[in-house]
Image 1 (cartoon, rainbow over the protein chains, first blue to last red):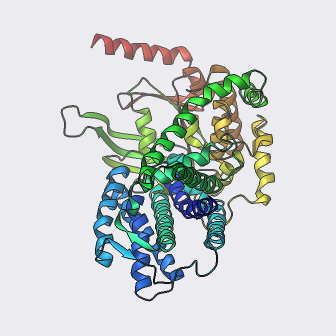
Image 2 (cartoon, each protein chain N blue to C red; image 1 turned 180 degrees about the horizontal axis):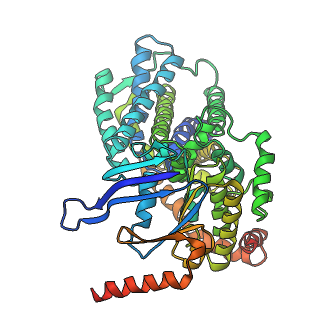
Image 3 (tube, each protein chain N blue to C red; image 1 turned 135 degrees about the horizontal axis):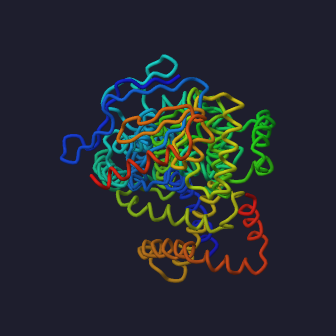
Length: 299
Length: 255
């Protein structure tokens, strides 16, 4: 049980990089980007390619980020320049990446046990915690910059960004590049953690990412004090722990995909349907209801 | 000073549903003057604003702002010189950001955005001053997300953001049409104060003839892409405008 929790925690941290990547598109730019299904294994295959070629695992992980953001650029150009719908653009990139990933090493499955990883001799969880906190702080700081706010505003209200004299397309491109870069990095972290890369490791990864984000959203849902990145990390770790317990209860790891989808369904429907219930409770003397009334009466 | 010359615009070009909105249309708006445009639906007033702001491309013609040709610039480049407040109060703000963050964004309009912190403490006092001028108590809600504000508050904030950097031309696109009469009155009064204080050249379109006359110095009535009346607002009565409206309506029904 102890190792199960530790493994779930470690995998949760790896998936939190994935989730932090996907919030850039799903939460901030408000678009569904399916290219992550291809960029997650892309990160893993790029990592394998360079580590086998003799590069340090740290550099190879960094290169995974760069390759991932290039794939994000392709998706962005497909819909920004060629006006293909975002959903289809993502699917097209994902499909191209499938072939590209297989080409990269010429194999669908590569063991990496012989090679060094960034986890080295220390407990993986310590290294992972350090990486995840660094990434989180970097994203948080970025979202507070002038460019970061334009990225948020692009997802929120494109006409405002245009009125500020800025082309929203540039920010969509930036968001997709960052997003897929992080997703690919998450793939590289996973590859060296599990000790092999496999062409199927990206399949339904978007569901895992969404499940994590949606679980993270339910944590004190109405508070805007909790940052998006914090929610993503909390969500990814909780998701993985739920999955770990499911296995512990006797479910086979192959059942986990169905479990993920069910988690997404349960949490989305919870978010959609519990609102009227909660407000009726609040009306019986809740503080927040009085506050929202004040806004209405203000005018 | 904005000059529109020889403007042509048609929709659904080449199909059997082709509509010619503007045929060799000319108009100019002098600096510091606020002009109201009224007219029935389909008269081309919204299209005119969209052509000026660049959200619609024109077929041919020229648009000069203070002597500079802007018709070849894309929408976001023109936006640097223009301010626009839309009918929908949510279009002028970023609903998920706070009042402070929205103002900080508007304050950077036309400048280059870098990897520097957006919200600077030094700017807050000037933002608070601006919000106080609205007299809506928004200065106490700097950290409230704009989506929690009422429509009138959001529209007043949009107005503030659109005029913050003193645009060469302000376009008001039926900006009180979505508000209730009382709120609409408050927003129109705020608009008037802001325009008088900053002497901004304004083009306002409105369906409310009363407001159009009251809050403008020049009034233009349009019909089928043509100017049917162009006078100083003080020389026009509401009845005169309504009579033209009715005459046009009768014309339409009998035709």
